[in-house]
Image (cartoon, rainbow, N blue to C red; front, top):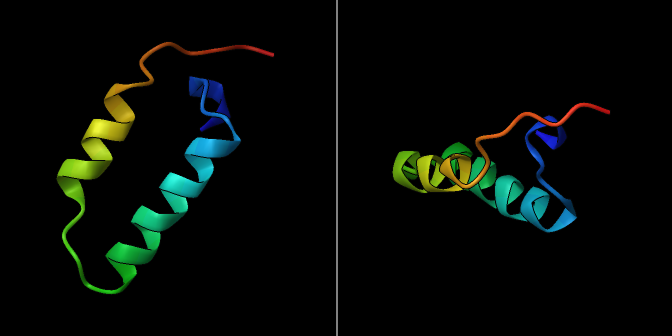
Length: 44
């Protein structure tokens, strides 16, 4: 995800979404909102 410019703060948000999904919650809309904030590819 860092290739898309996500930083440490977004990793916590991503982890929370993964946890929610594993608990059986529907998180598709939240995942799409998060992903739509990062549309450019960053090269190292």
